Image (cartoon, rainbow, N blue to C red; front, side, top):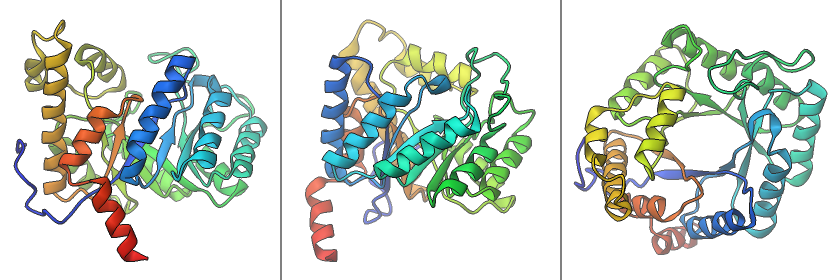
Length: 303
């Protein structure tokens, strides 16, 4: 990757979207809305709000999305899974989102009820897999539907080709966009994109980007989700376990390097997993040319 050199396409600024998770405590509530307000001026294409395993955050997700609609100019996309719920229960949630003004859902099968590494078992009266959920969402309303994609394959998939077949089923069921699991080697993403396009899948495949706030935590999560952690990345964070200030600077450098390289190589839409922390994401977007005053001026000129 190319560290910190300006994009060859200096006038090409990417579109961005952000993921947040619903807060569990009053303190986390404050942190979430500070992050939302900080990133809102960047005019993201949409912001997604996650949904806990088995619908465990259903009410918090709904409340967060509803507040975004009422108090911001953002376009929220509500996550929805089909774990541990009947079709009727899931359809009720879909209709509640529609009534709240939501027109975009991120459809996910969800982790097994027993946690990562256990066997997934569909609810006896539920949607069996994501493609079924996508079709169900589209039956309820004219939603935009985003799904997940896995450049290094889903941990449960027999092969990458089988995983791409599953993505094709989701697209055939009505998915309009996909967001990838996070990755650190951009070659992995572009090789995957070539394979996906060769299968006739033409929907946007947004690269999912995670700024590394805590390397040990991120590496642990990567192992569970099938994402590889290059040795060069581990080397950059080596010895910084007790040095949070330097760790943040290294995280910014690593993420900026990745994002600028993605843009250089033609990526037009970027999705950030924010972890409800805005400063690092905001800085990376700034380096990519996304500046509130410039965005506002462009919007005014377009009116």
